[in-house]
Length: 115
Length: 111
Image (cartoon, chains in turn purple, yellow):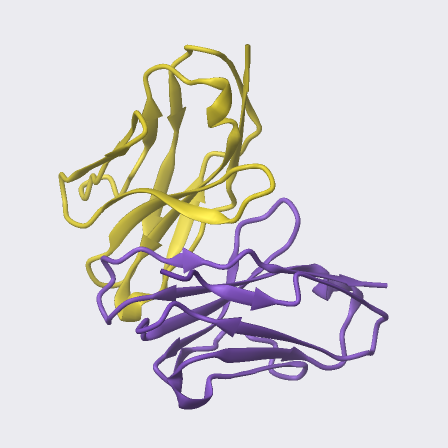
């Protein structure tokens, strides 16, 4: 079974530029999460989708971050314009069904460096 | 909302030492509790879980018991190995499947 796919793995941009990250979850997984992991910290939830609807985006900086999950499958996270403090690893995870008992499956992450 | 208080590291132990990493949480609803591990150069993966009070999750010699009365889920291992060196994250999953991660505890095991 294929895992969670993310791209690109690495991205270096200058501040005020834009960037987009893509995630393809495990087939059939209804719930998709985007996390931001700053070096030395735990993952922080940015947005959670159930199928193609947003469940929680309370910690998403909506003035610069946006995310969508069209057709309830793959998802895109965009940052525009980027700031220095956005340097982090962006993790995508997916989960089967609508129960809180299942494990999250993580992609390898997209490492962003903002100069 | 959900929150996690996790023992800060780094924790340095000698091989075969006993390990405890403390975790307490608050979460909406009736949460499931997870420990995830991140080995050097790898992505996050599930270590163990418990889905109801008094359940004990176990894997690779690690154990954690769901203590509802103290809202805790402490991770233990009786004899650590060098290969256990990693960062460990406590993560309750509460209402609407929200999963909140702790700050992470870095474990270094020396021979």
